[in-house]
View 1 (cartoon, helix red, strand yellow):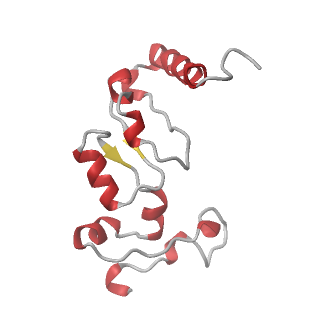
View 2: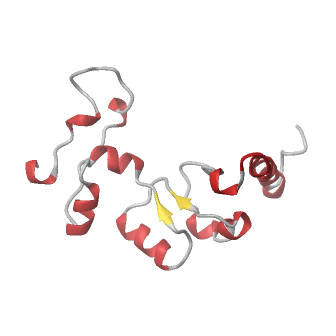
Length: 127
C-alpha cells in the first residue's frame, strides 16, 4: 500500500497530482481525463469542472434522456457516446427523431476482419 490507497480522498489525490503535473507541462486546455468506467457518476462529480476550470465530458453508459438531463442540470457540458455511436453511424439523426437504436456488438469493435466490423451497422433509412 502507498499514500494513494484507502479513502476516496487519497485515491483522488493521485489523479489530481497527475493532472496538475500535466497542466504545468502542457497547459490546461490540452489536459483531460477519463474517470472510472461502468459507473453512474455525472451527478456525483458536479465539482469536477470547477476544480479543473475546463470542459467536462461525461461518458460511459449515458443514453439520450439522461444526457439531456445531466446537461440541463449543469452536471456536465458535453456527453461522449462511444459505443452508441459505433453501433449507430447516424446517431445524431436517430436522437433528433427519437428513433430506435441499433444494438452494438462489442466483440467486433476492435477486430481486423475486413468483412465484419464497425462499418456493418445499418443507417436509419436502411434499417
